[in-house]
Length: 329
Image 1 (cartoon, helix red, strand yellow):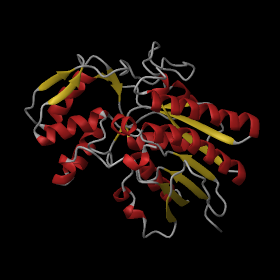
Image 2 (cartoon, one colour):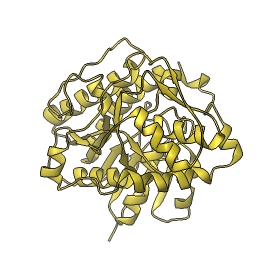
Image 3 (tube, helix red, strand yellow):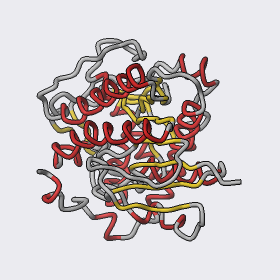
Image 4 (cartoon, helix red, strand yellow):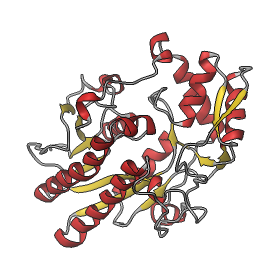
């Protein structure tokens, strides 16, 4: 009997690669797709010898063709860090709009269930705390972060349009801050930024007064929530994240204790439109999916720190990820 097949876009990225691992373990044939703008082949190289894994180097903003049946599609292709989407704003908008359109069309043609990866950034700088799925957000569409925020908001809108108008079987996950092995050290997000500075012997940079909050979910917990949502019968957006909230200043102090370094904390001006609060309300996930995070931040950080310590000297000191010039049109 043939194994069920799943297409995972953004497969060489942080979350995409962990999804590939999970679906292989669940007995699926995984069709992985990535254009490698921000993804890394090293994240999935361990899967290439497997008969039930295939890789397609492709940009989903262009027409997507996959031969054969597809039971599921998971759309995780998108730059996700500020460093990336500020360098490639047009590509970020295209993958959220054209890419999502192409994959919804593929799902309709194949009769596939499709799950799209949205983000807590659809809430912008929230005026409601914690954020429930019913909150519509406080987003600046023409600010520097708008290219990512609005791409994801459009992605949700077109996904629901395909669900209601064409009857496509859709799922929407709103992902809050996630961390774990395979994060890029230089991707600009706070956790790898702090650990990278500690490993290089640099002072830790906190923006503003460090009073802004974040809630960090370990990657294994997140993948479990995504899998349960995919297998559920719920089509509206669902928050998946860890509601254990901490200020950025306290988090910097936590990283210094974890790494045993003696760096100071220095303060820089707060970036424009940086959210001051970020905490998921996961009531829906608990009720509908019987899901909640299991891994404590203390345990998850230990695992993540051990991973970052294995990086090469070149990776540790690499500031810019790739040359994005060819992708900005």
